[in-house]
Each structure stands twice: as C-alpha cells, then as structure tokens.
Length: 455
Image (cartoon, rainbow, N blue to C red):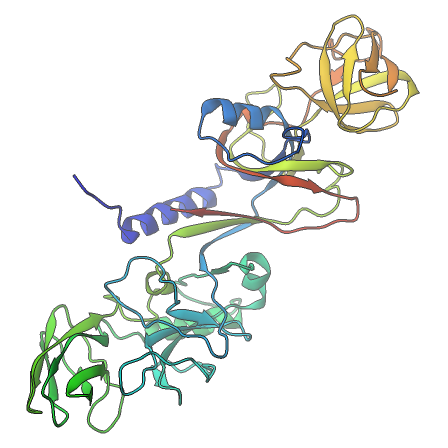
C-alpha cells in the first residue's frame, strides 16, 4: 500500500534529535577515519549500510571533536538577477527546480508568494532584488510578491551557512543577551497571520472572456481577495490583490474556493493556495520545508595533539556516546585521539605514514598513521588483522626502511607495548558515514566540518 512520511513527522524527528543532543548525558562527536588508500586508484566507494562498514570505519578512526552546534538547514538558493523563481505552492512536495525562496547577499531570506508573470501568464525573470525587513508581504516592480522571513546573523552564518545549504531556525523568545537577528526574527514570527491564502493557481483558464471577471473567495476565513487577468479570452493569472491593487491574503482559512462571475466567459477554475497554518514567518522551518539537520565542528590545528595532521583521512563520521578506551566510562572530552601508539626504546630509521609495519616476534601488522620521537601511531583493520605487538620486539616496515625496537617489559606499564587511545569509537553508536577522496591536514590548518543529514 502506498504511504508517505510527512514533512511534519520529519520535523518532529529532527527536533527530537536536537533535544537528545542538548541532553547533558549525551555526547555527539564528528570523527575522521581511514588514512589508508581505498584501492589502487584511491577512489572513494559509496558507503554501505552494513554492520561491517560501520565496524571498519570505527576500527580505523583517527580523531574526534565534539559537535559544537546544530541546526535545521535547507538547500541554499542565492537571489540572482535574471533568474525565474517559483511561488509558494501547497501542492508541491519538497523543493521545486525553480526555488520559491532566496537568500540575498545581505544574508536575508525571502519567500516568493507569487511568481512574476506577464499578461499571458508566462513567468518572467526576477530583476529586482527583495530588500527590507517588513513584517508584511510586498511586491517588486518585476511583478514578484515576496515575504521577508529572517536574517542569518554572523554567528549562524559562520556555523551553518555553506555553499549548498543555509540554516533555518525558530526562536521561542529573546532576551538582553540575544543577537540582533534573533530579536528581529521573533518580531517576524509574532507578526504572522494564521491560515492565509498566499496565492492562486489557475487550473483552467476558461474561454470567451471579453472583460475581466470578478473573483470571489468563499470560505471560513475573512479578508482574502483575488484579481484576474485575461488574455485571448481566457484567465491567465489570478493574484492576491483587491480592486485597488493592495495585497490581501486574508486570515483564518481552513477551506475556501474561488467563484468566477461576469466577464462573458465560462469554464474557468481557480484553486486557492493556503499558507502554513500558523502563518508565513511563524516558523520558517515550515515555510521552507526543512527536513535536514546540520552538525558542525571546527577543528583547529592539532587540537592539543588529538587531531591528526601530516596525514590524510577519507571518512567523516558522526558518533554518539563513545567510551574512554578500555573503560566502561563514557568519553566526554572536547577532542580525542582514537589511535593506538607503539612506544620504541630505539629507532634505527624513522617510519613513514601509510606504510605497513611488521612485528618480528608477534607477526603483528599495522598501518603507520604518524610518528614522533619515540612513538608510532597506527591502525589495524581486517586486512592486517588485529594481532597485538609484543614488548621488546623488533618492528620493521614491509614497504619502507622504518625500523626500531619496542620498549621491553617493565619499561612500559602496558603489557602490549602500546599506549591506549583516548576514545574507542567501537563502543559508541556510529550514526553517519561519509566516504570521501583523501583530505590532508597540516599543523596550521583550521577547518569547518559540516555533516548534513537529510530525512
């Protein structure tokens, strides 16, 4: 039987995730994994939703950083001179090819209520950028009708504004510590008019109209008006205007239809388009049909030696509630190193990142991730197997010149000549995997990692 998951339910699910993140008992981390090439061409494969895929990503994890912020997001459409935009339509699922909302270069977000059309009903390009922060809809000279929703302030922009996505938020209130964009948006939310009629779709233009007919909105709300345009004997468009040319959306409509009278023609039908039940601007997440969440973290350099530099990574993970390595206690640090380390009594030649090293006595194999004066950070996977290295043994590279002798028994409190990592991702819940081409990091590099999950 055909069925759908509604946007309302998706919104509820994302809101529950946000509540879970805000719970102090939970810790969400963005992690990086896999320093080893994918294959001979190092081409990233599509991740599989299997237990094996999750396990391999967790076992090869390099570093984690706690999620710093999260937000609902929607696809980003920057206003462009000469583009054609759609109007808001309650009979369209998701985001149409021609967007019905835009963000301007001032980081202000507007929704299109009515697409600009000529007298024949053909869409025209947008030539006037929407501006201003009015709480009511307005029309520009190119025939487009707009409604201002919110401004993305500097903080939200730095956290969530990306090339292809932008944040959308509902604020419950503001106080003296709130940013100006939050204060502004709460004003827009509070000014929203419930259950407006935001436009009209001409489903049949009819024929034989010699003069402009009268359009009457009949329903259980009040105040909505509509004006028709005719061309070639048919109705070519209907707009949210009264006879004086004033925008009139009305309020409190749960049902309505349009009666066409006069003009000498017949056969025309016009469908009202209903806005969100709480009104445009009351909750921009509804207006823009937000069904995605972004998680954000900004690792800076080595993050106190916890974030791997000098090597590359190929996976980005989202992990919930991992434990401290070799412990039942939850990890709660801001950053964490997920790599094991071999401790050497001496090295005759330095080891090289991504090479394979072999324990002369144990037969253990591992991939080198990075090195220090007396240590080597490494990962093992199902190809190297997971044999433990032994104290005091010689370790050499199988595909390089690196060589050394591990600390002997008694020097290192660890019976396996390695130092445990800070965090063990195999103990948490991996919620997301993104396979990528190799990404390299350097000591002076800072970056903005964003994970977007679309429901």
